[in-house]
Length: 95
Length: 263
Image (cartoon, rainbow over all chains, first blue to last red; front, side):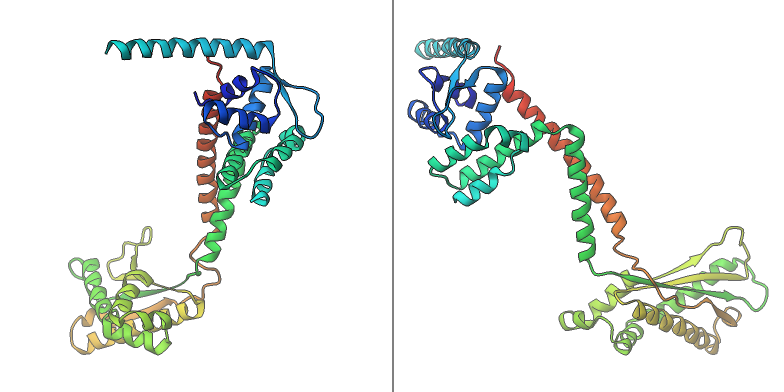
Protein backbone atom coordinates (compact mmCIF):
# COMPACT_ATOMS: atom_id res chain seq x y z
CA UNK A 1 0.00 0.00 0.00
CA UNK A 2 1.83 3.11 -1.18
CA UNK A 3 -1.09 5.43 -1.97
CA UNK A 4 -0.13 8.60 -0.01
CA UNK A 5 -3.77 9.46 0.79
CA UNK A 6 -4.34 6.06 2.41
CA UNK A 7 -1.06 6.29 4.30
CA UNK A 8 -2.05 9.70 5.69
CA UNK A 9 -5.51 8.43 6.68
CA UNK A 10 -3.92 5.40 8.34
CA UNK A 11 -1.52 7.66 10.21
CA UNK A 12 -4.33 9.89 11.50
CA UNK A 13 -6.49 6.92 12.49
CA UNK A 14 -4.89 6.74 15.94
CA UNK A 15 -4.80 10.48 16.68
CA UNK A 16 -4.22 14.00 15.39
CA UNK A 17 -0.82 14.77 13.82
CA UNK A 18 0.94 17.57 12.02
CA UNK A 19 2.90 17.08 8.78
CA UNK A 20 6.27 16.13 10.25
CA UNK A 21 4.67 13.72 12.75
CA UNK A 22 2.79 12.05 9.87
CA UNK A 23 6.02 11.65 7.88
CA UNK A 24 7.77 10.02 10.82
CA UNK A 25 4.78 7.80 11.64
CA UNK A 26 4.33 6.62 8.05
CA UNK A 27 8.02 5.81 7.76
CA UNK A 28 7.76 3.79 10.97
CA UNK A 29 4.64 1.71 10.21
CA UNK A 30 4.85 1.43 6.38
CA UNK A 31 8.57 1.84 5.70
CA UNK A 32 7.78 4.57 3.17
CA UNK A 33 9.24 8.06 3.33
CA UNK A 34 6.79 10.52 1.81
CA UNK A 35 8.47 13.63 0.41
CA UNK A 36 7.09 17.01 1.55
CA UNK A 37 5.48 17.63 -1.85
CA UNK A 38 3.78 14.23 -1.90
CA UNK A 39 2.62 14.56 1.71
CA UNK A 40 1.07 17.97 1.20
CA UNK A 41 -0.44 16.89 -2.12
CA UNK A 42 -2.22 14.12 -0.21
CA UNK A 43 -3.23 16.46 2.65
CA UNK A 44 -4.68 18.96 0.14
CA UNK A 45 -6.72 16.26 -1.62
CA UNK A 46 -7.95 14.70 1.63
CA UNK A 47 -9.03 18.06 3.00
CA UNK A 48 -10.86 18.89 -0.27
CA UNK A 49 -12.75 15.59 0.01
CA UNK A 50 -13.60 16.24 3.63
CA UNK A 51 -11.76 13.14 4.85
CA UNK A 52 -9.45 15.15 7.14
CA UNK A 53 -9.71 18.63 8.68
CA UNK A 54 -7.29 20.96 10.47
CA UNK A 55 -7.58 21.31 14.23
CA UNK A 56 -6.41 24.08 16.57
CA UNK A 57 -2.66 24.62 16.26
CA UNK A 58 -0.29 25.65 19.04
CA UNK A 59 2.44 26.86 16.72
CA UNK A 60 3.09 27.14 12.96
CA UNK A 61 2.75 23.37 12.64
CA UNK A 62 -0.83 22.52 11.66
CA UNK A 63 -2.27 19.30 13.08
CA UNK A 64 -4.99 17.39 11.23
CA UNK A 65 -7.68 15.00 12.37
CA UNK A 66 -9.50 12.30 10.43
CA UNK A 67 -13.25 12.95 9.92
CA UNK A 68 -16.04 10.37 10.18
CA UNK A 69 -16.20 10.33 6.38
CA UNK A 70 -12.45 9.76 6.17
CA UNK A 71 -12.63 6.97 8.76
CA UNK A 72 -15.39 5.26 6.76
CA UNK A 73 -13.34 5.53 3.56
CA UNK A 74 -10.29 4.12 5.32
CA UNK A 75 -12.33 1.20 6.68
CA UNK A 76 -13.63 0.42 3.19
CA UNK A 77 -10.12 0.54 1.79
CA UNK A 78 -8.72 -1.64 4.56
CA UNK A 79 -11.54 -4.19 4.15
CA UNK A 80 -10.92 -4.28 0.42
CA UNK A 81 -7.18 -4.73 0.95
CA UNK A 82 -7.86 -7.42 3.56
CA UNK A 83 -9.95 -9.35 1.08
CA UNK A 84 -7.11 -9.16 -1.45
CA UNK A 85 -4.53 -10.22 1.17
CA UNK A 86 -6.63 -13.15 2.34
CA UNK A 87 -7.29 -14.34 -1.20
CA UNK A 88 -3.59 -14.09 -2.03
CA UNK A 89 -2.60 -15.98 1.14
CA UNK A 90 -5.14 -18.72 0.44
CA UNK A 91 -3.91 -19.13 -3.10
CA UNK A 92 -0.28 -19.18 -2.03
CA UNK A 93 -1.06 -21.95 0.49
CA UNK A 94 -2.93 -24.02 -2.09
CA UNK A 95 -0.33 -23.61 -4.80
CA UNK B 1 19.66 22.50 0.34
CA UNK B 2 17.05 24.35 2.40
CA UNK B 3 17.44 27.25 -0.03
CA UNK B 4 16.55 25.07 -3.04
CA UNK B 5 13.67 23.45 -1.20
CA UNK B 6 12.26 26.85 -0.29
CA UNK B 7 12.76 28.07 -3.87
CA UNK B 8 10.92 25.03 -5.25
CA UNK B 9 8.00 25.68 -2.90
CA UNK B 10 7.44 29.09 -4.57
CA UNK B 11 6.18 27.22 -7.63
CA UNK B 12 2.97 26.30 -5.84
CA UNK B 13 -0.08 28.33 -6.93
CA UNK B 14 -0.72 31.52 -4.93
CA UNK B 15 -4.07 30.21 -3.67
CA UNK B 16 -2.41 27.06 -2.33
CA UNK B 17 0.40 29.06 -0.74
CA UNK B 18 -2.10 31.33 1.02
CA UNK B 19 -3.69 28.29 2.66
CA UNK B 20 -0.70 25.98 3.30
CA UNK B 21 2.55 28.00 3.06
CA UNK B 22 3.01 28.59 6.80
CA UNK B 23 2.59 24.98 7.87
CA UNK B 24 4.48 23.71 4.79
CA UNK B 25 7.46 25.93 5.66
CA UNK B 26 7.30 24.70 9.26
CA UNK B 27 7.50 21.13 7.93
CA UNK B 28 10.46 21.98 5.66
CA UNK B 29 12.35 23.42 8.64
CA UNK B 30 12.00 20.12 10.51
CA UNK B 31 12.81 17.70 7.68
CA UNK B 32 16.35 16.77 6.61
CA UNK B 33 15.89 17.62 2.96
CA UNK B 34 17.79 16.30 -0.05
CA UNK B 35 17.62 16.64 -3.85
CA UNK B 36 14.82 14.08 -4.03
CA UNK B 37 12.74 16.39 -1.85
CA UNK B 38 13.42 19.34 -4.17
CA UNK B 39 12.12 17.27 -7.10
CA UNK B 40 9.23 16.00 -5.01
CA UNK B 41 8.21 19.56 -4.13
CA UNK B 42 8.55 20.68 -7.76
CA UNK B 43 6.37 17.76 -8.85
CA UNK B 44 3.83 18.63 -6.15
CA UNK B 45 3.84 22.29 -7.17
CA UNK B 46 3.39 21.42 -10.85
CA UNK B 47 0.49 19.09 -10.05
CA UNK B 48 -1.17 21.85 -8.00
CA UNK B 49 -0.62 24.34 -10.81
CA UNK B 50 -2.27 22.03 -13.30
CA UNK B 51 -5.14 21.45 -10.90
CA UNK B 52 -5.75 25.15 -10.43
CA UNK B 53 -5.24 26.20 -14.07
CA UNK B 54 -7.75 25.55 -16.76
CA UNK B 55 -6.90 23.89 -20.04
CA UNK B 56 -6.75 27.20 -21.92
CA UNK B 57 -4.24 28.75 -19.49
CA UNK B 58 -1.90 25.75 -19.66
CA UNK B 59 -2.04 25.53 -23.45
CA UNK B 60 -1.51 29.30 -23.74
CA UNK B 61 1.46 29.28 -21.34
CA UNK B 62 3.13 26.46 -23.29
CA UNK B 63 2.38 28.13 -26.63
CA UNK B 64 3.86 31.49 -25.54
CA UNK B 65 6.92 29.74 -24.06
CA UNK B 66 7.36 27.71 -27.25
CA UNK B 67 7.14 30.83 -29.42
CA UNK B 68 9.65 32.70 -27.21
CA UNK B 69 12.15 29.80 -27.24
CA UNK B 70 11.82 29.35 -31.01
CA UNK B 71 12.25 33.10 -31.64
CA UNK B 72 15.32 33.20 -29.36
CA UNK B 73 16.71 30.20 -31.25
CA UNK B 74 16.06 31.95 -34.58
CA UNK B 75 17.94 35.04 -33.37
CA UNK B 76 20.90 32.84 -32.37
CA UNK B 77 21.25 31.41 -35.91
CA UNK B 78 23.52 33.47 -38.21
CA UNK B 79 21.41 35.34 -40.78
CA UNK B 80 21.64 34.40 -44.45
CA UNK B 81 21.06 36.99 -47.18
CA UNK B 82 20.01 36.15 -50.71
CA UNK B 83 20.85 38.21 -53.77
CA UNK B 84 19.05 37.51 -57.04
CA UNK B 85 19.68 38.52 -60.63
CA UNK B 86 17.88 37.65 -63.85
CA UNK B 87 19.52 37.00 -67.23
CA UNK B 88 17.91 36.47 -70.60
CA UNK B 89 19.27 34.67 -73.60
CA UNK B 90 17.89 35.27 -77.10
CA UNK B 91 18.60 33.58 -80.41
CA UNK B 92 19.85 35.59 -83.34
CA UNK B 93 17.70 33.91 -85.90
CA UNK B 94 14.56 31.84 -85.78
CA UNK B 95 14.82 28.85 -83.57
CA UNK B 96 14.57 25.52 -85.22
CA UNK B 97 13.34 22.35 -83.66
CA UNK B 98 12.91 22.32 -79.91
CA UNK B 99 14.20 25.83 -79.08
CA UNK B 100 13.72 25.57 -75.31
CA UNK B 101 15.61 22.33 -75.15
CA UNK B 102 18.53 23.94 -77.04
CA UNK B 103 18.52 26.87 -74.60
CA UNK B 104 18.55 24.57 -71.62
CA UNK B 105 21.48 22.62 -73.06
CA UNK B 106 23.35 25.84 -73.75
CA UNK B 107 22.74 27.21 -70.25
CA UNK B 108 23.75 23.89 -68.69
CA UNK B 109 26.99 23.93 -70.65
CA UNK B 110 27.80 27.46 -69.44
CA UNK B 111 26.72 26.57 -65.91
CA UNK B 112 29.19 23.68 -65.82
CA UNK B 113 32.03 26.06 -66.58
CA UNK B 114 30.83 28.87 -64.30
CA UNK B 115 30.32 26.50 -61.38
CA UNK B 116 33.49 24.48 -61.99
CA UNK B 117 35.86 24.04 -59.09
CA UNK B 118 38.48 26.35 -60.64
CA UNK B 119 35.96 29.09 -61.29
CA UNK B 120 34.35 28.97 -57.82
CA UNK B 121 37.73 28.68 -56.07
CA UNK B 122 38.83 31.85 -57.82
CA UNK B 123 35.60 33.55 -56.75
CA UNK B 124 36.02 32.41 -53.10
CA UNK B 125 39.60 33.63 -52.89
CA UNK B 126 38.90 36.83 -54.83
CA UNK B 127 36.05 37.91 -52.56
CA UNK B 128 37.59 36.45 -49.38
CA UNK B 129 34.58 34.19 -48.71
CA UNK B 130 34.26 31.43 -46.04
CA UNK B 131 37.42 32.52 -44.20
CA UNK B 132 36.77 30.49 -41.05
CA UNK B 133 35.57 27.40 -42.95
CA UNK B 134 38.69 27.50 -45.14
CA UNK B 135 40.80 26.99 -42.03
CA UNK B 136 38.83 23.85 -41.10
CA UNK B 137 37.77 22.24 -44.39
CA UNK B 138 39.49 21.45 -47.70
CA UNK B 139 38.59 23.79 -50.57
CA UNK B 140 36.96 20.89 -52.41
CA UNK B 141 34.31 20.56 -49.66
CA UNK B 142 33.71 24.30 -49.49
CA UNK B 143 33.20 24.51 -53.24
CA UNK B 144 30.82 21.55 -53.10
CA UNK B 145 28.80 23.13 -50.26
CA UNK B 146 28.68 26.43 -52.11
CA UNK B 147 27.47 24.74 -55.29
CA UNK B 148 24.83 22.69 -53.46
CA UNK B 149 23.51 25.22 -50.94
CA UNK B 150 24.55 28.80 -51.73
CA UNK B 151 24.03 29.05 -55.49
CA UNK B 152 20.85 28.36 -57.40
CA UNK B 153 20.30 28.78 -61.15
CA UNK B 154 16.76 28.26 -62.39
CA UNK B 155 14.95 28.96 -65.67
CA UNK B 156 12.02 31.35 -65.37
CA UNK B 157 8.81 30.22 -67.02
CA UNK B 158 6.62 33.27 -67.25
CA UNK B 159 2.89 32.78 -67.52
CA UNK B 160 1.93 33.04 -71.19
CA UNK B 161 5.53 33.58 -72.21
CA UNK B 162 5.89 30.68 -74.55
CA UNK B 163 8.32 32.25 -77.02
CA UNK B 164 10.77 29.79 -78.47
CA UNK B 165 13.52 32.38 -79.13
CA UNK B 166 14.11 33.66 -75.57
CA UNK B 167 14.69 32.12 -72.20
CA UNK B 168 15.22 33.90 -68.90
CA UNK B 169 16.92 32.37 -65.88
CA UNK B 170 17.59 33.57 -62.37
CA UNK B 171 20.78 33.32 -60.35
CA UNK B 172 20.50 33.32 -56.55
CA UNK B 173 23.42 33.53 -54.16
CA UNK B 174 23.23 33.18 -50.40
CA UNK B 175 25.76 34.42 -47.86
CA UNK B 176 25.78 35.73 -44.23
CA UNK B 177 26.85 39.19 -45.49
CA UNK B 178 24.39 41.01 -47.82
CA UNK B 179 27.09 42.91 -49.73
CA UNK B 180 29.10 39.74 -50.32
CA UNK B 181 25.96 37.89 -51.42
CA UNK B 182 25.49 40.64 -54.02
CA UNK B 183 29.17 40.56 -54.99
CA UNK B 184 29.00 36.77 -55.49
CA UNK B 185 25.99 37.23 -57.71
CA UNK B 186 27.68 39.97 -59.77
CA UNK B 187 30.71 37.75 -60.30
CA UNK B 188 28.53 34.87 -61.48
CA UNK B 189 26.59 37.02 -63.97
CA UNK B 190 29.92 38.34 -65.34
CA UNK B 191 31.20 34.79 -65.61
CA UNK B 192 28.09 33.75 -67.55
CA UNK B 193 28.61 36.61 -70.00
CA UNK B 194 32.30 35.73 -70.38
CA UNK B 195 31.49 32.09 -70.84
CA UNK B 196 28.87 32.94 -73.45
CA UNK B 197 31.49 34.81 -75.45
CA UNK B 198 33.98 31.95 -75.05
CA UNK B 199 31.40 29.47 -76.36
CA UNK B 200 30.65 31.77 -79.31
CA UNK B 201 34.35 32.13 -80.13
CA UNK B 202 34.76 28.39 -80.05
CA UNK B 203 32.27 28.32 -82.90
CA UNK B 204 29.74 26.36 -80.94
CA UNK B 205 26.25 27.61 -80.29
CA UNK B 206 26.79 30.78 -82.29
CA UNK B 207 23.09 31.14 -82.77
CA UNK B 208 22.57 30.93 -79.01
CA UNK B 209 25.41 33.07 -77.93
CA UNK B 210 24.63 36.25 -79.78
CA UNK B 211 22.47 37.81 -77.12
CA UNK B 212 22.86 37.20 -73.41
CA UNK B 213 21.83 40.15 -71.29
CA UNK B 214 21.27 40.99 -67.66
CA UNK B 215 17.61 41.85 -67.14
CA UNK B 216 17.84 42.45 -63.39
CA UNK B 217 21.26 43.14 -61.89
CA UNK B 218 22.29 41.44 -58.62
CA UNK B 219 20.07 42.77 -55.84
CA UNK B 220 21.37 44.01 -52.50
CA UNK B 221 19.28 42.12 -49.93
CA UNK B 222 17.87 44.34 -47.20
CA UNK B 223 16.47 41.64 -44.94
CA UNK B 224 17.83 38.18 -44.18
CA UNK B 225 16.26 35.38 -46.15
CA UNK B 226 16.92 32.89 -43.33
CA UNK B 227 16.07 32.44 -40.48
CA UNK B 228 12.59 33.91 -40.67
CA UNK B 229 11.94 34.81 -37.02
CA UNK B 230 8.17 35.02 -37.56
CA UNK B 231 8.05 31.55 -39.06
CA UNK B 232 10.17 30.10 -36.23
CA UNK B 233 7.94 31.81 -33.64
CA UNK B 234 4.81 30.44 -35.33
CA UNK B 235 6.21 26.91 -35.35
CA UNK B 236 7.25 27.30 -31.69
CA UNK B 237 3.75 28.55 -30.86
CA UNK B 238 2.17 25.57 -32.59
CA UNK B 239 4.56 23.04 -31.02
CA UNK B 240 4.06 24.67 -27.60
CA UNK B 241 0.29 24.51 -28.00
CA UNK B 242 0.45 20.80 -28.84
CA UNK B 243 2.82 20.13 -25.94
CA UNK B 244 0.61 22.16 -23.59
CA UNK B 245 -2.51 20.23 -24.54
CA UNK B 246 -0.70 16.88 -24.26
CA UNK B 247 0.83 17.70 -20.86
CA UNK B 248 -2.43 19.15 -19.63
CA UNK B 249 -4.46 16.08 -20.57
CA UNK B 250 -1.76 13.74 -19.19
CA UNK B 251 -1.62 15.62 -15.87
CA UNK B 252 -5.40 15.74 -15.58
CA UNK B 253 -5.62 12.04 -16.33
CA UNK B 254 -3.01 11.36 -13.66
CA UNK B 255 -4.74 13.59 -11.12
CA UNK B 256 -8.13 12.00 -11.86
CA UNK B 257 -6.72 8.48 -11.43
CA UNK B 258 -4.94 9.41 -8.17
CA UNK B 259 -7.92 11.29 -6.81
CA UNK B 260 -10.65 8.85 -7.78
CA UNK B 261 -12.17 7.30 -4.66
CA UNK B 262 -11.81 3.54 -4.55
CA UNK B 263 -15.55 2.84 -4.33
